Amino acid sequence: MNDDAMSTIQLNGSTITLLGTAHVSKESVELVEEKILSKDFDCVAVELCPARYENLKNRSWWKNLDIYEIFKKKKASLLLINLALSAYQRRLADKVGVEAGKEMIRATELAAENDIRLEVIDRDISTTLHRLVTKVSFWQKIKIFSGLIVGIFIGEEVDRDQIENLKKGDMLHSVIEEFGDSLPQIKNVLIDERDEFMTGKLSMLTMSENSPKNILAIVGAGHLVGMVPGFDKPSDQIRINELTQKLPPSRIGYFIGWGICIFILGMFYVGYQQSPELGWSLVVTWVLINGGLSALGAALALAHPVSILAAFLAAPLTSLNPTIGAGMVVGLVESYLRKPKVTDFERLRDDIASFPMWWKNGVVRVLLIFFFANVGSAVGTYVAGASIIQQILG
Image (cartoon, rainbow, N blue to C red; front, top):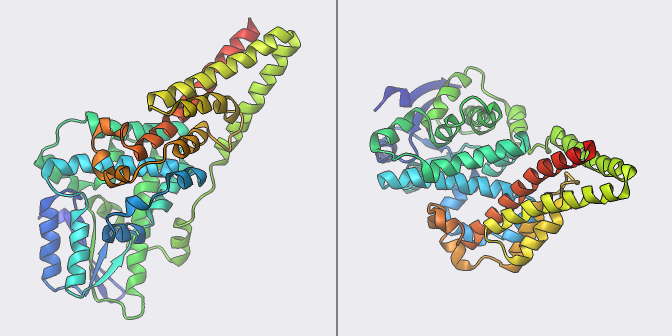
């Protein structure tokens, strides 16, 4: 075993053994089994949040998703990024014939079988994704999603040696490295904050009543780089609470959205002042380009004809209101008209790993419709805005 994949920390009278794993490695699964079965530990801590732990115990949790409610609660972006991350993991896992996260699954199983205390120490996945969505811009979200898609379907073949090299960085690290240093906000939310959160949780565990004396903490190996030095000054409960807060949307994006609204309406007014014909021409330009590109996006995702019409009608209006996106309107319409079938949920885990099935699975298709309608409307806003300025300047 690579010495860099394991580190021992003495804290508050307890010993914490940090075991770094690759989430798609047979060797990592075997190593976890060996450590737990050694009976050297009275507590096993895993890089899971309560929600993901429950999902492991209830493997059919996908079937309980209500897509219509997801759109109503504006959580479609969170689910789409989560599915893309899952598909990325699935692609790597399929190369070596081991289920992604199998070492975490085995850890929870062995802890239960051997009556060893189990602790989940990661931040809730919904909080992490929410903070990601609110901290990065719309175009950065597109870069994340497109980068994942490239990694899933267009990436080079991955052999076992490359998979084992993931011990230098877990799945999220490998995704983020593809973006380089251009999106530091993403690394901060997906990696740095979680390093700090898990270090703080382990620290508080050692100070709890009946605290365990020998803790085996199983985390993605990339987290060791941030977690080990973090034990010099671990986070307290106040900081943990800060890291679990779901941040409000960025005010910058809010002001930019209203700025675009005021600018476009101002251009309509200026055009109408020059001549009523020009004013109406600008309105028609806005509707046709913005609505047309959003409708085209929905059509590319194989939306229902009524949903395509909804995209055309909604985009010119939602682009002037930063509190709602065209994709959400179209997603609501699509999920109402063509509610995903039970079989779509049952096949979701398999279908996300097959690119053609993204358009055939009812759950994934409605999320693609949401995504492409939003992208089309965003592009349409800038294209139509440029055309309007050109017409006014003559």
